[in-house]
Image (cartoon, rainbow, N blue to C red; front, side, top):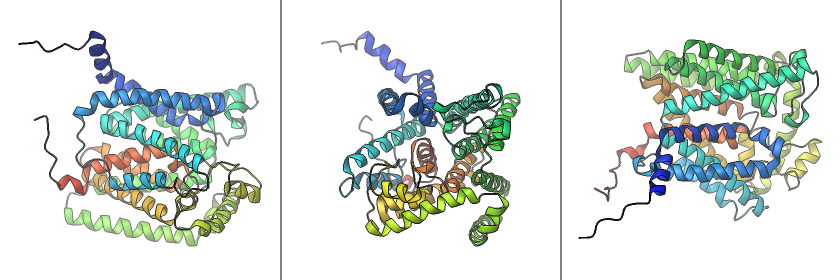
Length: 433
């Protein structure tokens, strides 16, 4: 009887490398670091350099994904709402006014979706929080160091990184992230992550205190009215979430959940009604004026292709209509619509807008219920991150691209892992058994 042929030694060693936990962690750090540093990479080596970095990471991620394929439980994990929205964005190539640009934008979206799926399916929740915490600790510290160097030591801007050197005047600062709002959002996500790290005993108290202090300093020096509002929202949401977690009586917990949802809706309506005095209080007139001009132009252009949209684009291309028209009418270039919801409506129409709302609604609802009912504090991370992303989406389109989209997909998949209706369906028989 013939003996089964043994695999070559190089193949065995390569497979063991891609299967190893150390390689998966190193790859995860590179993925998260690259996703948050896209602006800095583009500013230093341009789009070709960024595409090269992402392409190399895709190859390594595919290899690691294949190595872990048999240990991933797929049954009921990939949320239908996510698949449908991404599929609709891809389908917009058919009717897009700029088909080649839409094709490129769809592929770019798929790259970060793929990275997010890898992180969500191969790494567990604590490992994801640790990876994001380790990356943001380094990036925020580096951002502060560069701002100190620019604003205090040499008293000159670092133009190729977009650092204006405003630290001596108390800000605003942007660090490695291109704008103060983006730095503020990253610092807010980092603060939540650092606290969850400490609560899960993943890091020591000293490192946690240092990390939170760096995040708070970044938040303070961004001088962003948008982020100031988001800090209040996150603090209130965290207090409500952790308060609900400590209620043991299920009837009381349900009543508090309903009350919390009702109060949130009422506060949102009141905030919209009294938005003018709130803006005055936060000295945010300049921020709102710029955004209002862009929103007004988007609102005028949406009816032209109201149902299907102009075609998915992600980053705005200033040379393509309607974005060239918006930039001309507002008098300044914009890389996005400064509001993710209007941006989605403009690009993929009313259908895409409703699919996006469904995606966020299911992800938020599932993650909030998991965070308020599961014993481990790690379940509090996804809802708080989603609140930060969704809240900021009213004034930025970060949630649609790169690190913002990657975090959204991670939270969506993790929520689906715990609360998917398809978990009740019978699993397909394992052909290997």
